Image (cartoon, rainbow, N blue to C red; front, side, top):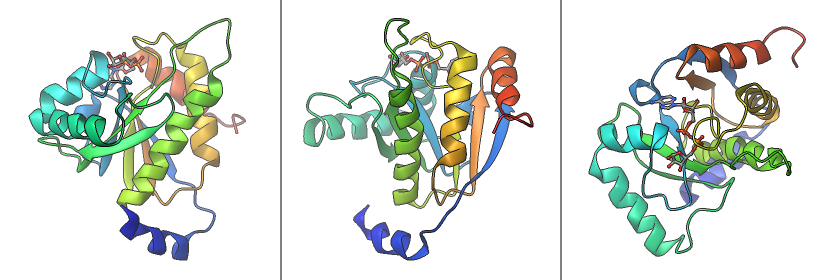
Amino acid sequence: MARFGAARQYVRGCHTPTITFVQGDITEQDVDAIVNAANHSLLGGGGVDGAIHRKGGPAILAECQKLRQEEYPDGLPTGQAVATTAGKLKARWVIHTVGPTYAQSKDKSPLLADCFRNSLAVADELGAATVAFPAISTGVYRWPVDDAARIALETVRTVDTQAAEVRFVLFDRRAYDAFRAQAAPGKG
Ligand code: AR6
């Protein structure tokens, strides 16, 4: 990954991606990188994570196991991101990030924003021009989708990335509408 460092510095400036929205399945996306709403273990789970490992095949899990052994013996911390191959998926890479679980008693919004920011930093290191995100933390981790959409859009709008397109892939109509509402005029 370090080999991209110099080029990135050279072209670095103020870049913001085009933001698009799709209702559908993230595993079907023809993009350079898809982001996985993973957990600390990196060893799979339900939701998006389960779908990615099921369709991508064992190569993704093998790389995740290697990452656990070599770089993250205690698991991937919340808000951080790391890439593997995408196995049999159309995408070239899967960027795994761990969203925070929702809690009314504690504001974990910065950690959710970190997921988007750090995933795009990894995408830049890979040279990924098109990156697809699911609605991180809004499933098993119970984050209210309107609030998750606000945080996602605020972060992606202001992040400096070389990615040309950030695509939000929302599984159901409710999530799609919530994300689209954040893109409406007057919402930033
Ligand atoms: N494509 C796009 N979005 C999807 C798909 C899909 N194929 N499948 C589900 N969603 P979740 P989290 C939506 O639970 O809340 C896993 O077990 C879903 O409707 O996948 O961050 C991990 O291993 C929801 O809106 O992720 C972790 O343990 C959104 O994706 C934990 O769940 C996120 O739901 C992470 O929980």
